[in-house]
Image: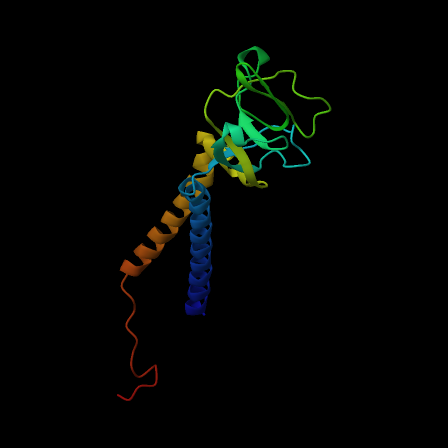
Length: 188
């Protein structure tokens, strides 16, 4: 009976380790592959684009020349200094005009009732444009950005696995009782 329980426990732990490995590989792929494809990623932290993508979504963006941007594209940019905002904004382009100084953009969040109160010019020749979003995945990036949550998410499971393997290792060091050949049905 003890042998069966140990085997079941070993199967459960093995399944848990396999599941953790698959999740780890998927997380690594989500982090590395877009970068290898030249994409940037941003976590959507606001609700101004709700209905299109929700807070906690992970947005994948590819840099494109500013001249290739079109009305309807969703971009992530820093609002002008006089806007009062100090964080990146991901909104849809609703108009592009040209004046003597270049292209002038207006944006709007899909969930907002009115357009953004500013117009702006993009200073760099390339601009990230949203090409895909994955719902909910950004919450993991938000959680991992906080040191205490990162310790809980990564440290506690790692500590539990280490403790399990330490107990299993110590059990393996104990001498096992010798079986009497007469008791297990072997000829004497």
